[in-house]
Image (cartoon, rainbow, N blue to C red; front, side, top):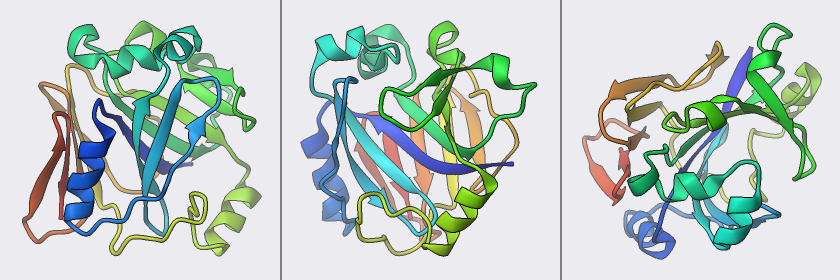
Length: 206
């Protein structure tokens, strides 16, 4: 079975989004650039998974890349979802036709074909890993994300709002709950009833 690895949201103003998170005590890492995609990130890391703020740094490069993250970055005009759901593991032979292989960053990443045919849905992709590799990762304490410090708590639920539900195979990890409506991603970290709107399409509940 696949495991949820991380979730991302593309933002137009990363400085403002990061500041709102840091104002509430969350610690973001320095992040990294994504070679050939025209994007970079900063991350919130928990023991088992992480969250990425992603933004476009080179629109021409993003347009030339097969992932076409430029469409998701311009979601207010294109209607594409600005969210991504990353899983770790192996897709089954029967699921293989629904994905295509992207290896420009080195690791083998399987991209769901919804990225091209239904971009209004979140980008769903699978980071290929064997059962042994996944077990070794658990023994190391989960996701290191470049050595970033782990946040308190854990990602409990992911709520995806949008015009169409993401295409998901069975997976382990926090539940992903779909709600029809305008694009919005809500990350549920705790149950104290606090909520912060981080950007026009991103909120954290803790």
